[in-house]
Amino acid sequence: MPHPADYRALHTTLLEDMYGELLFHYTTYGADVPDFAAAVDADRVASFADLRREAARQADDWARFHDGSMAAGLFGEAEYTYERVYRMGEFTLSRMPPSFRLREENHIGEVVSAADGRLAYCKTFRLSPAQSKRGHLLSCLDAHDWDLLATVRALGTSATQLARRIDAAGFTGLLRRDVVARLDRTGRRTDRRGVSGT
Image 1 (spheres, rainbow, N blue to C red):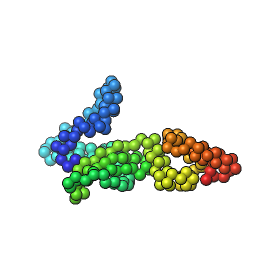
Image 2: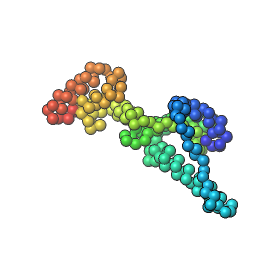
Image 3: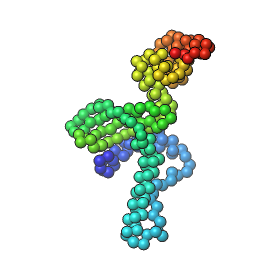
Image 4: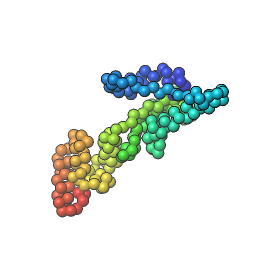
């Protein structure tokens, strides 16, 4: 947010939109959530300069924790594309689809940016590994125009394995049943001959 007052106005919405279920779940726990308060060692403070140094150390520690633990996958080596959705005055709302990298953090979200590129608002969701796998499979199918054999080659897998992945991901309903069954039969037949299911 550009200013703390902007965040304060949206704080309740942020909690309800992004963490409602989590907050409800955590209320069932017996122990209190630890406080994230700054801890200044009184023995290290003998002057205002010492206090400023300790406050700066706390700010640095929080920044390292935030960037390293909380948002490492969001700000790391991730590449994002932005799809412009809406423009109002000098502000643009864009979607931020993930690249669906396997075995890495993937985030999906939206951003509002000013005409000069300044970020005015950013909301992201971290995808679970299962969501990332499903998204990766869908993006591969889409990239190959839903040609199953082309997708098999691109993924370096067999036809049987692709048919199983489609079924396990819950996408069988997106394809004609006879097409997936034929792909599975083709894969099993060629697998028995020791040849890739392509």
